Image (cartoon, rainbow, N blue to C red; front, side, top):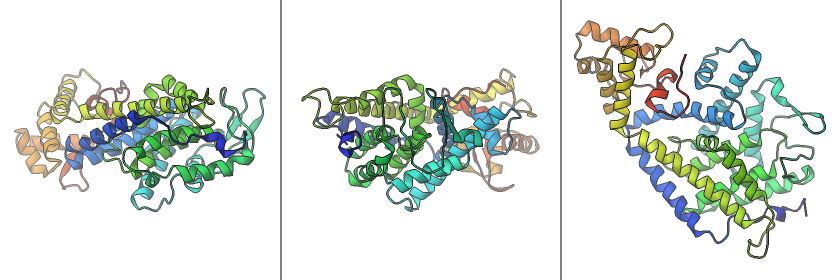
Length: 404
């Protein structure tokens, strides 16, 4: 029984119509996020959220690497302490694999994203970029060390807490069944989102790799939400919600690991009630994150937080970025003008500030140098930027505010 693919049933929760109602609510509210800001601003925010996803995915693994240090690593600036440097490399690897995955989904070159080949590619691309220290696993009970081979299914039995995943010899059969059951295009309507939730648990339950299963499951889940497609996804983070409720997340995974209790608990080998609980938890986390970002993306509120940031910088109540001067109060008018328009010519941004031409150009240059405004060319139009030193103030509680 332990190596039979029937051990993974039920594949979808049974008798849980309320899950579809919850999924529909996530779909509708997520779709509305795109109307909160100019499309150019939203695209810049998506770039920031890749960093946020990496930060929270690392946090779930017990690795706390501040987004400031992640950005430094993206610019090839690594910490001199080997342990911190390794965590920076881990973060950059996550961002690189997420970007690769998104490009494949967009170009429709990913194939069956629930298939073994795609899942192994996520694992391979991620672990290939990691330091050597991350490729050695030590069994806490036996002390035995094993090497993680990027992209390869595990070749030994494992135990995760109280859960004993399927034997390694049966992994190909379980992965094949997973690939048949969970392609997003196989499901319809709100069931698609319920299936994403169920697939997240079942992949964790199979535990196909020696290490990195949680990471692959979260990347796979993001791929599914892009493929559904879930309009507005990319403007909110599943990983943030799971990390902020990490103990509840692990408990929910355990619920769905449990065997069927009695004849009222579904018709499969595993507990239907446990799977329903996990899917409900997962969808509630999604809804919470959609609502959180929906509030932060309201234009009036964002403009007010930008004004406050400029005021705090002008009065030296928060630290300036390295080498930067205090901000003039007129910077708020410049940033507001760009927020309202998405992109704007430099001359019109200076005009909106009310400053004289020379003073306005100096202030505009400072905003560009700090990354608060971004342009593709030295004289081209500017758009809003979300540099790490300011993004925590613009989007409170997205991650810890930089205090250095």
